[in-house]
Image (cartoon, rainbow, N blue to C red; front, side, top):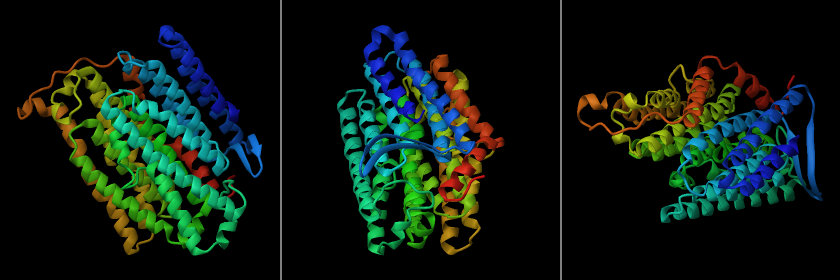
Length: 492
């Protein structure tokens, strides 16, 4: 079953390539099949994991390295999120890509990206993680350059350089971990042998892995590929920002902090403080830059940079409530941000407009799209009743439980950032509902609502974000045992 999570989408990528645009119905079937099948398989795996079974599968053994997969609470948590959103994104793509070119290449690359992502999520060691980590980088490249314009190729080159540099740092870190400990397997609570290493060696490891995963998680200074990649079709933007690429960067940080270093050693060495400072700077700077954007997808891109570091900052509270909030924010942000990108894609395809300043009167012509956009925006800002307020409140509690000067400052970062977020999400909402009445912006000419293939996924993700903000027992039920397991605590 673990192997099928990788094999099914990889095989369907081949079938999509063979089907081509001439057999559209078969191509679409082979696109939906792996997403739906993987979601069901992860549910079945989750039942076994929660039933106390240990699932490990070795694909290749070449001593001292192995390509090996394992199922645990955190992998199931992420696997359910990614496959569900991937399924919705695939349906959304059917409507969005109707008039696009190179559709076969697009869908083939999406399937390969799904296979790579599953390999990452269910990897049991750093070697397997790295192989599929790089596989994801290369499989997403054709999606970034999809438009085949000079700007698209420039963005693709920047994307490649940044993420290959990140992958190289992860490779160096993997080699170093093996040299120091004799293995690369993820160990809940951390690898014991690392505690015997010198401070300089541990600092070097921290730098390599922080840089390596910082590229995909868009830490300040390593992030600029992400806004530029917005040249890609909107479903690709959704995959980049809410489903695979950036979430994989966060997933890498989780694996390194909890299963390589271990929380105790990471905190003891002061690495948590360094990461918290970097995350705080990223949160504020990205929010300020987002405030200055007029192009809607670029504004959302910088919002993603801002939101990803909420997760990293939550981890560094090293309080259970704060770390739980960070884990919940991965899911909540994914649902809210993918809704925003779905809405942005709908606005662009139906009106030809991509600028916030031209959104006056949008709500009259596209009420459902604007409703979804508004719900998700409220959640990103952190206002009830949408899910974002829950995870933000938990993370702030993690810092407020220990009222040191540093923790108070980190808590204030959340408040300041939310105020700035209010500043850049208010204009598009205000213009859409009231701009045409004020007369300071001429009403834009908008089409009708998007086809159901685009509208339904957007409304589903908006609805889930709202439900999780009011009744969040399902994500809590999955997140708590996942966090306890990562901490090395026995889960009952």
